[in-house]
Amino acid sequence: MSFESSIHELVCKQRNFFQTGQTKDIGFRLEKLRSLKQVVIEHKQAILQALSADLHKPIFESYLTEISTIKEIDYAIKNIKNWIKPKKAAVSFEFFPYSARIQPEPLGVVLIISPWNYPFHLMIAPLVGAIAAGNCAILKPSEFAPHTSRLIAKMIGKTFDPAYIAVVEGGIETSQTLLAKKFDHIFFTGGTAVGKIVMEAAAKHLTPVTLELGGKSPCIVDTEIDIEKTARRICWGKFVNAGQTCIAPDYLLVHQDIKKSLLDSIKKCLQEFYGENPATSPDYARIIHQKHFDHLVNFLDDGEILIGGKTNREELYIAPTVLDNISWDDYVMQEEIFGPILPVITYANIADVINKINSRPKPLALYLFSSNKNLQQRVLQSTSSGGVCLNDTLMQSAVPSLPFGGVGDSGIGSYHGKASFDTFSHYKSVLQNSFWLDLKWRYAPYEGKLSFLKRLIG
Image (tube, rainbow, N blue to C red; front, top):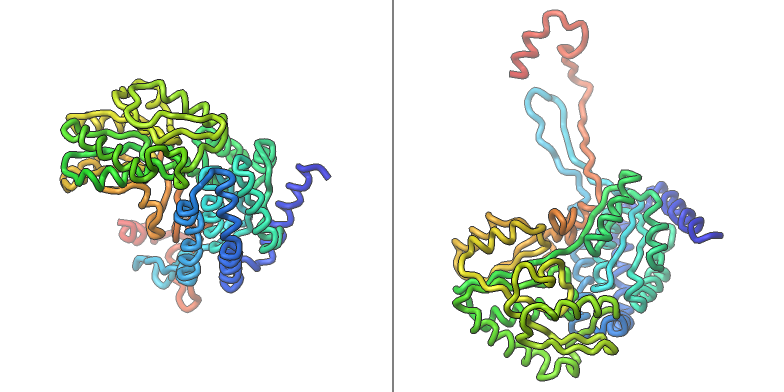
């Protein structure tokens, strides 16, 4: 059997299983969520080893950003009974004696394509929503994180019937084969360029998509701040996972009055985090592969290297780096960096900053460090982004009650918590009448009824 035929057969098996109605049962969903949690717990050590092999990811970061997906499962288990309840909808008096409700139902068979930067979390987190909503799912892990991909395939294979949830490993050709099939929803996390390809393929089947992309997330630093805490939070958000985070602060917009103090504090923080030589630190990750490494190194030609700048291609190491004297026209400012390189642009007028941000594609995240509430409100009202975090970085993605997603070029749709359930559900409108009353004014013949209809409509 050819690979394409096997994929076709797998999709058909999942459609047949979905038609049995088993996935719609609340008991079934809870059982499968608990099974998913259990297999994650059982394979914690293997997950840590796979992430270390793929990204040289420190154990602490793996727990914090990948194993913590367990909390997403717990949140769904705790709330799913409330999520699946039909919600009453208001009905105006002219529709008496009707009643109305909105009832969530699963979409069917969904495809989830995950990236390499957080290869475990960004596969399992959307899967939680797909299971909670009552769908079947085919999972496509990133081939650039092969150890994690193989482990996910093993874990899912031993836990779920492939007619319900299955993993398909492979590269670009595998993705192309999958995208040629008709799904009821496609959930993709990755870059904007590939996101466009996914959306184009989905359009041929009128398949709805969730695209979790990225972009250049600005980090504005005002004068009314705690310098030390600001520097610490920026350093953590930028250099965790060696900067390979879709919502990492991509560049700093620093007020001229506090620039020197902030950069001095950032330098001090980096030494505290990773020591004098981050290459020897057990707490600093590596770049995913040589192609991405080579791409990142080109950014180092811009501006002036203020901090870091050392590289080692054999070890896929790029030191935490800060670039000063950067202009908006530099190469490093033309696309998302997705690595441990932080360009710094100085500003004097916040209006200029807002105008510049608004002239560029909408980012996935926007960060503002300031205690000035008027400034906070101004930035919130004057800019558009997938999400905003005030006086911190990355943490907006860790709160399950906050939908996570982009806008414009940074993505379509959202997930996390109930938003994940919503993403993989169709909210069906249900209107119900009774038989005890049947007003005949809407039925033919219409003679003599127009004046009443006019009064009713207004």
